[in-house]
Amino acid sequence: MNGKKPGLVLGIETSCDETSAAVVREGKEVLSLVISSQAKLHSRYGGVVPELASRAHLEALLPAVEEALGDAGVGLEDLDAVAVTRGPGLIGSLLVGLTAAKAISFAMDLPLVAVNHLEAHIYAAFLEYPELEPPLVAFVVSGGHTLLVYMPRHLEYEVLGETLDDAAGEAYDKVARILDLGYPGGPVIDRLAREGDPHAIPFPRALMRDGTYNFSLSGLKTAVAQYVRKARESGLPLRVEDVAASFQAAVVEVQVEKITRAAREKGVDRVVLAGGVAANTYLREKLREGLKELGASLYHPSIKLCLDNAAMVASLGYRLLGEGMISSLEVEASAVLPLGSR
Ligand code: KG4
Ligand code: ZN
Image (cartoon, rainbow, N blue to C red; front, side, top):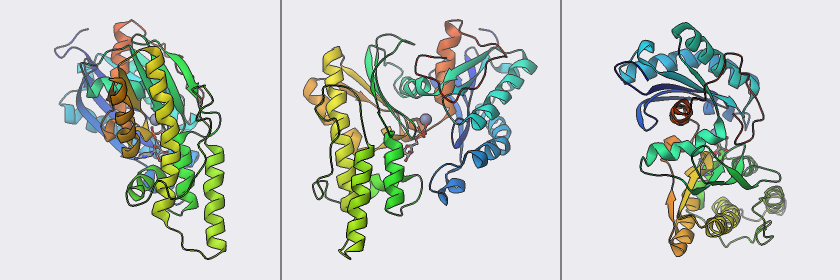
């Protein structure tokens, strides 16, 4: 480490529809975090349009980097490294961030640290809770992923289970589309569900007691679509709040069962919720209750750090930098990158 402010990492995140830049000190202290969301741009299409996303990243990234440096009161010359998401994600979007990070690394002679987006989501928890340490169980749940993971030590992972079809966020977004609620669907369903009855409609709980740590949501999504279609065809009153609450209950009950079982089996007393869907208030509440019975604690980052952001990228980047895990300028973007691959 060099410079008068040791441990300063610039993080860059462009894997999906958020353009983000952040400056983080020693992997823990967020000096600045700029997030430019494209949600409005994509909302009329009910999902992210990859070509539009890459173009928007191109326009937003350099201003975001400048703003992040300005907010932190530092210049490029003060940095110790630049960390960037290289996957998984939309390839065109990833390329924008990775290319910019390479250019900064080359121009400023700074170490480049390419990071895995899923792993970065877990590292958001270490920003929010500086005292938190592994061993822990992490549930990484976003628009593209649903992963239940055992983390015995920093930078080490054992994937216990994952989704066999739709990611949880994807299911929230699709159900929101069925109900004409716009994109992203998760926050709207979360809000509407608070006014609804979670027991109103008995939607299926797939793989609830199959003994694995895998998830399946496509059957649930179809069940919601059929229920809504039938109600609309027969002209029966459709209580959107009840559909939202019953759908959410079906998703969360299975998640809580599997996460608490994983914590018990691995003998850990710390569980981290990570990724965009970790913002879900019902999941947080039910999981906290479930873990309380085990004597385990729930760690969930604030909503800003749950969603895609560059601070988590910088936090993980600092950890990798400390282990000498620096990337070459030849490192490539990767749409598919399993947890544990960097
Ligand atoms: O991690 P993230 O920002 O992007 C990906 O890497 O996918 O997650 C975005 C996803 C979207 O599917 C969005 O609907 C979902 O997270 N989401 C939520 C909530 N807030 C965002 N899902 C359920 N409840 C929420 N409160
Ligand atoms: Zn994400």
